[in-house]
Image (cartoon, rainbow over all chains, first blue to last red; front, side, top):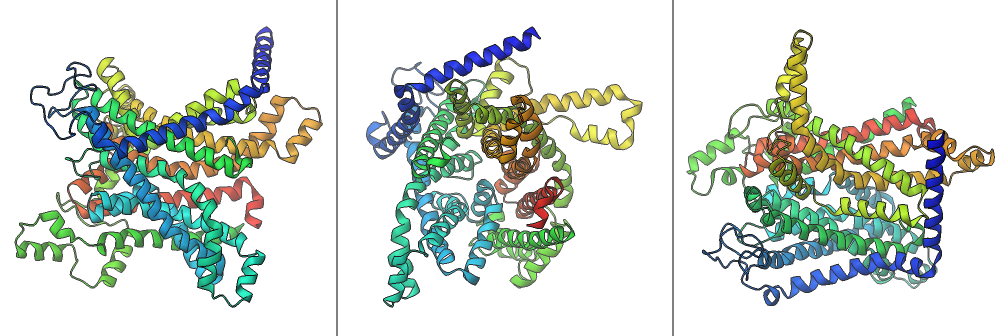
Length: 301
Length: 334
């Protein structure tokens, strides 16, 4: 009984302390903006690193230093994060790898957006048989987890940057179809759509000229949420050896090559994996923040 | 009820058909001749023609398609191109390994994820509880399973030497003992075998389980939040029931429906997770088999593995939908 009392008391104390923390305006401000700030900072940092990779990397990612093979971080002064089995500088390779991750991340979201949004708008605006057809196909694609679908497509086409983007982009498409359809369903009931129709605007014209621009804002705000998925999927594909072929460094294939050396040289896998996690974390944070801004009801879910 | 089950079954059939069509057409219609891919550019034209004939690729596409569907339903995926044995046999041998991995990681994910989700829903206004839990969930969501796996291997296998570095243990032996009844005649050997399998299973299950726990905690958190705001919870509180009784008797019981949803989503993600997990831990299983087959360009094996993955995902969702009707009879009348 005494133990139960003690537990209750501890819970009460915890609740009180939490109440105090929650109460102050500053705490509330921090609670709201700190995760967003961290996410935006990391995401922008990654974009800068990827864009300026050749300038930032201390040396060429493919330069082989035969005198410094598999050196630990800091063992040789100029190799801050150490070197791999060919004596290539790990830091330079990770910096260059940011490019692949970001390219796949952005391009596959754009691809999914470009393919999914028109389909979603047609489905939502027109309804009827075209809606049934589009949504059934969407449900079917939804049944496949992203990585599995990407595996199927990459198996058929072979691994390369373009194929990865294509594969992951297709896997992302159902998300955009659903979003766009939901928006189109609301927009279609608006008076300005009625007005546009009354003025003699054809379906295509109304969809492209009125529904799409009005849905665009919400769609663009939500889109960054989906960047985290392709970055992680790309890393997974590269890790399995089905992504970008080896001479080009990507975080996944650095990690995969480093796997053979985990006994002696764990830094190869540790740092490349850390890069993947930070990138995914950054876009997850940004995505959550954007969703909260757009729909305060879902905050913190 | 019967109508509901029938309707749901009728939806699952075209789903399965559609998904399998995607697999088939992705493999066949997309550019790239499987024979050229398997045998390389240097293959003689006779060898290529031979391969094409063996795989039945010279027949009209429609015939191949129907043949593929018909054979897949009977779980006949042809013979491995490399080794020659039937793909279905290989799949049957690999399936138990993947099955135990998914089950073990489900246990880890449930033990970690569900309490975190419920706690963070109940204490969502308390930053001292909410913050750490949200950070854990976010890290789990962002951490690739293959990286976590390698970190675990570095620490627990290489540094501390507590767990094996590769392999899946003698699961076949254990299953064989159950089949032959040796469980009863040699219980000692049996438990040693089970122990060995669990020993090999621990790290993979932890890695996959932790990364999935984040998803589970998110789903159970929103499920709990929804339930907490229901009228019957308010009624229970208004009756003067203690907070514990409200949570255990009313809230948790009604979590069965969302929990089923979680299981459905979970199986889909966990199955793809096994592809990466089995590769990191060099464990036998369907995922590793798929990756190896793609690497070796063994199309029949790859296609068989992907088809089985798809079938499992759709079937699990079908079963989950059926269970909805059992747990919550209202579902059937909607």
